[in-house]
Length: 256
Image (spheres, rainbow, N blue to C red):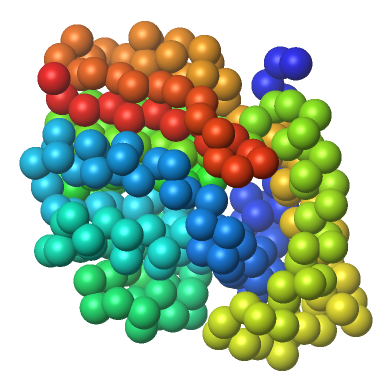
């Protein structure tokens, strides 16, 4: 199946911020609760070591992804780890909640474009569940910007264009209904727009299925790196690994 770049509600500037935040809060809760990123801990450690840094600049952070749990695991070997959360649509309440869990979190409260990261943000760049939001030329620009700045970059997607991934997304409204009351910080609006006016489960369903259709395959990510300028001194590790019943596709780019 070829990549299909349909629209996601989360990407639309007209989509209400509070609804977008409810969706990213759900993804953060699910990522941390299921520890879905356990298999990629060695990849992150390798990326930090190759970059010679103790800092992560997370792009497209949404609600913080699975970084609360990942942070505790990474600090076991990188005790001075620093993580900076950024997004083009910053979810400030989620960022503040994540920061409250550990004092090594920081966040930028103004928009940060993954295609043009400010020069003063230095560290291993990461993206969790966000690379598929970008059309091909924009996705390539994210990688090109990392190369141009001499930054290492690690990208992780927890879905793919496959029947099992799409089927899992079809059942996502049930997961939203089962988990909403446990998501923190608690918001009465999240309860209202999940159970009484079920906008959140419906938009999570649509965006989830579309995310699968948009996700770049291993071969497509390899093709993107092959088109970059001045990347001859970079090493690219692009693989597909199992994560429980699901999969994670990842790209790690580091200066050779």
